[in-house]
Image (cartoon, rainbow, N blue to C red):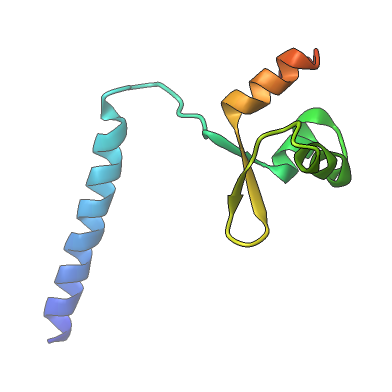
Length: 91
């Protein structure tokens, strides 16, 4: 019984690893960027405090997606648009 469970779990991990690898094979050498940024990442990117970012969110200057009860995510496209409109240098 223990042996079968081990072999099944080993096969499952192998399939997962294979599916991840195959998902990126069609773009070899291409780095995949995240589509969303957190408030903390924006603070580092713009060198601003969290309260300032939340003021942008509350004033609806910066569009966000609410994740769960308290977490926010900002689309990279919205970040780039915000930087262009406010003449912030992209990083």
